[in-house]
Image 1 (cartoon, one colour):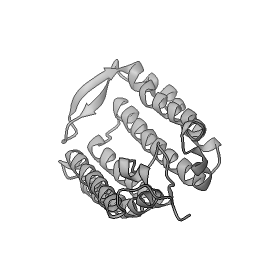
Image 2: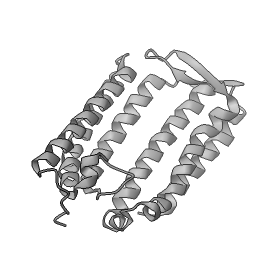
Image 3: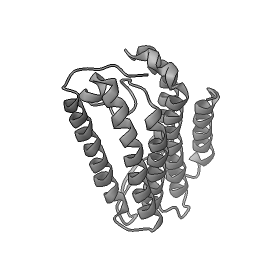
Length: 217
């Protein structure tokens, strides 16, 4: 994975803010209800810099995380996957930033659709990446049981691949169909998926006798 991609995303986010800044009102919509109605606003400067700042922090952390993770040696086994996971998250934030700026500038952007569609697409991508993740303390399904057994980590992340793709597809389709409660469905769907993986990791750990076991790789 080319190291310049995260910084390209940062630059695009910053340029978008600069270009649109003069077109934004004094207070920009930053919170919406299920029907797309504005439920909260933020000062123009905050709306313009909030997500670019988060994106920049992620770009800075990408090379630092493997150095500070106690299991940093594992990153060599999935460095491309790790970077792809982080870039996927950054791209979602970039899309949401573009939608926020566009609506703030007066364009007819349906945030209540953009968010579920973006989150659903991200979950599908992550579902394809997570099975390749190796034990670490920063990305993946990190429960006490996956972190204590590499075998449990591997089994849990194989299941996570299917779970994330299914959950993402449901959220994506609901968003594309424009179902009004789509934003409220995201939380329960993701919550159920997360709970399933937590329970599964515990069950697998108990099947191993609750004793840490190294990976076969």
